[in-house]
Length: 127
Image (cartoon, rainbow, N blue to C red; front, side, top):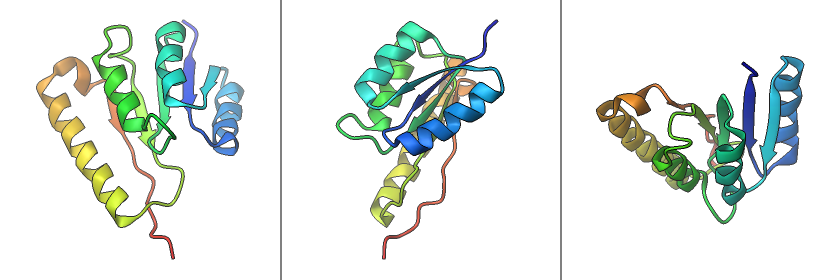
């Protein structure tokens, strides 16, 4: 089975960094720069995992995650989420709430509990 990963990030520097590392490890990699594209690509590409930045323009990473987890074609794909930029205390608190909701929802749905992984880079307050 071919190892495949979909990287969803609007920052080309971050996305390309991850792309290079995964390709070095013999993964087939696709990149999406926007949430709308990510959902469609996930359906078609069927990656082994998705790396998802939560801070996307237009459609947020949270919305992308919700669409992925409610779609029968993508609901079992593991998703790792992060924020690759600085965020305010309000955004940080919102992220914590979203993660708690996702974990609670996942614990009541066995299929989801193994397919969603949450990770958070430390948010730093802007000066």
